[in-house]
Length: 67
Length: 227
Image 1 (spheres, rainbow over the protein chains, first blue to last red):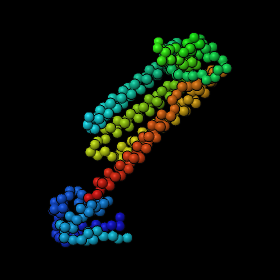
Image 2 (cartoon, helix red, strand yellow):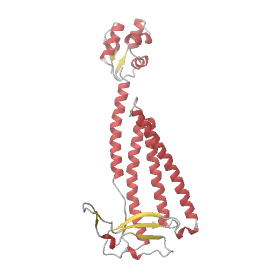
Image 3 (cartoon, rainbow over the protein chains, first blue to last red):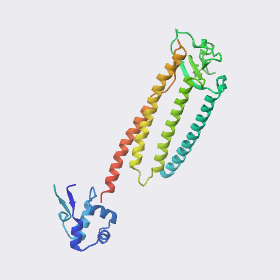
């Protein structure tokens, strides 16, 4: 899929663990793992909003398009 | 009644029917093999029975084929001119007619038609067992929490194929049976009474359900991968 999820990069920059982020965003660890590994087929605006809020970033910092 | 309870009931019912059919098939096979081995079976011990009908009217009446103890076929004449008149209920609201030109054809096991009849009955039983096995597995795997599964989709498709195959076999059986009877009894115009079409329609309906189910499976997978 040409959409790349850079969640791990942002988490490393914020020095935040996956479980910590899952707790703050209020989604399950498995769902967050699906997103991080690029297996997710879709992301809800509400989830993206919460992730951006917790990581203090823009959606473009997490999602990237490459051919 | 809760959906899970319905699934449980269907699971038990299909399991009961499934194992019942297996036992019945084994009994039939054993009984038939014993009949084949038994030399006295030609003297009326057990016959394979078929319902046939005569459509031609100008030909020789099948009543003339009287079993003399040496041939492989026996006819039980069920139609009679005396019985062919309509009868009515006392108030005259309901009339009932005997079915004319209808016969029960009994085949001795130790004959070509007997072996053929055994093979057809066994094949039908195996088909029923196959269909019941698919239903049984579907009800075992089905649950309300995760209703769509790849395995159930595959089983639904297999069920559709089995139903269509059962009807195809009926057509093949109809053709072969009529040819074999014609070989045994020249000038006879017996036609096997069979119901063709139910399996095709059921198979197509199940296939249509399988296609819709596949769409449900896709949506469920997509929903599971949406975070």
